[in-house]
Length: 113
Length: 114
Image 1 (tube, rainbow over the protein chains, first blue to last red):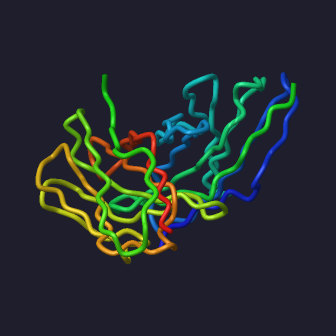
Image 2 (tube, chains in turn purple, cyan):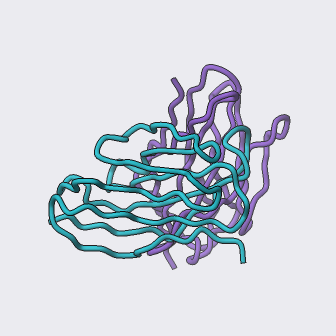
């Protein structure tokens, strides 16, 4: 069965510093991986997805994600954090050939001015 | 504008009184899904639909019903709501239920069952 873990409930980063939000996954086959962001009182918004063969994927708002097959990880990164990046971030995984998509529990990102 | 629309956005009701949360998408998407979001538990899938007249249980289907009679609509029905169904609900859609198609989410329905 597929699963996804976001080991940190909250991440605090100073504005201008690089940020990383961690995600690890478990699937029986090859994974489809996604990152979403949720701002207060809004639904989730798609940020980026893993594309087979690209270990570094670029997405919206300057975010990127690093895929590591051996560590089964898909960490979200940004070189320089903005206060407006403060939000709740979700990692999600779908196994190839499966209908279901599983979301992590979310990581709250606080960017400190 | 491409969007997923949920109604109502907020609802306070009482135990046992049937309610329906509507969801509509204007993107001609085949796949639609319902989730509930609870603190510390993240997003959990209730039901999903791969296409018209095709629905399947997610991880937490107990106490919920869905139907998909038309492509654009996917209502969530609580026949006899109970307090443990108090939650924030999201409807989502995507072009396909397979592969790496991202989902588009509605803005949520906050349900309180007293």
